[in-house]
Each structure stands twice: as structure tokens, then as C-alpha cells.
Length: 275
Ligand code: X90
Image (cartoon, rainbow, N blue to C red; front, side, top):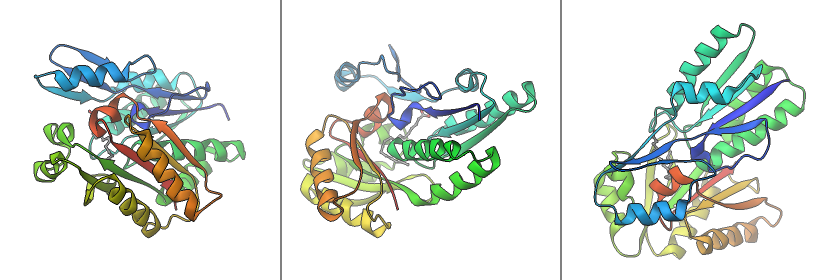
């Protein structure tokens, strides 16, 4: 299969192979625009934004961005951040319609991850696996949709200021998170919204809550992708807890990209996993 897997940059992945690419989201202020790609200096962006007094927000890839990333692949699988919080998925669907009309015979499958971050990477890796098995486009689509019922995302946040300011979470919940040492832990809900489940005093309690939530969602030793915003300690501590329970589990730690660093903020962590 001549194929390409395209994800938006909220997946926190820096692709290294030609058949996987990302389309950037942007972080914007009244003065500056940061494009969420491999060249973005995330540390400087956070420093600048933390001292910036004006408004800041984000924008999703447009139809043209998605089309460009499709390249000239015969079969495209596009994986987008939850359509409940972003217009990225809708833009990908628009791009699919144009692409298929312009190139009869070519196919695009748009997947609304109802999530973001590592959960999107799990989906992309499963796509690669299914394609490598030699399945047809339709078979891959059916199987990936089934697999997506078994992927999940949890988060732990130290601040929800940017999420609240941009209307992605209620200000009431966000206020608790601003209190010293309160960590909000939660998940991507079934409908792809941000669901805060626990207000925990300190990181240790939050990590305990997260492991419990993983087990409650049916985690039993599958793949885990942890991405953090300058909080390697929490990521390592969570990894150790998971390995205590499932010694053979594949647990990877990475860094959040620009978009997720903006919303998850310093100290934040996101955990994609399989059940
Ligand atoms: O289109 C845009 O401008 C992008 C908007 C993105 C909004 C939310 C990003 C959240 C990133 C926070 C923790 C994980 C939340 C899971 C929610 C489904 C990271």
C-alpha cells in the first residue's frame, strides 16, 4: 500500500519516517505566532508566554495544511485531536473531500481521536502495524476504529489557566488547579472533552489516582506513552508505578510538543495507554 499517516502536532510526536508526517497547530498572541513543529523552541515559548500580559490562544491546521501533508499518497490516514475541542478534525474531513475529488481512486480515512497526545500516537502505530499486515484500506479502517475503543488518555495538570482562558474547561475547575500544590487529574471523556476527575494534594497523590484510573479503564500491561511539560520526575515516578504492577509493560516517556505544552502548562503530564 502506498500510504501516509498524517497526525496534527497535538500528538507530541516528531516523525522520523517519511510515511508519517505531522501538520502543525499554532500558538498565537497579539504580537507573535509560534508554529508547533520540530523547530519550535518550547522552553523559550513558555518563558515568553508566562511573562506575556496580553491574550494568547491557538489555531488548528487549515484544509490546505492537511492537503499539503497528504502529499501524493494513494491511501491516507489522518489522525486529529478531538473534534470537541478543536477544528482540526473538520479541516481534515474537508481536505479529504477535496483530495478524493481531485484524485479519483485515492482514499483518505479521517479519524477523530476524541483525544490527543500519546493516544494519537498509539493509533498511528497500530495503523502502521495493520498496513504492514497487508490488509486493504477498508480492513485497516474497520480494525483501527475497533482498536480506538481500547485506547485512553489521562492527564495531570498543575495549572489550567490557558485551558480556562481559551474556553476549553470551566473556570470553576480551573480555579482549584491554581491553588498551591493542587494537581487536577482526569481523562479524555468518551465524547472527547476534558474531564477533571480528582483534585489531589501533591503529585504523589495524583499519580496514585492515575494508576487507579488506568486499572479501572482496563489497563493490563499494554503500551503506555507518557508526555510531560518539564516534569521528568513525575513521568519517571508514574513509569515506575506501572512497572511495579506490570514488569513487562512498554512504557515510553517523551516531551509535550508546543500545543500541548501551551495547554498542559509547566509540570503537566499526559498519558496515552491501551486497555
Ligand atoms: O484548535 C485549537 O486551537 C486547539 C485546541 C486544543 C485544546 C485542548 C488541548 C489540550 C491539551 C491537555 C491535557 C489533555 C486533555 C485531553 C482532552 C481530550 C492537553
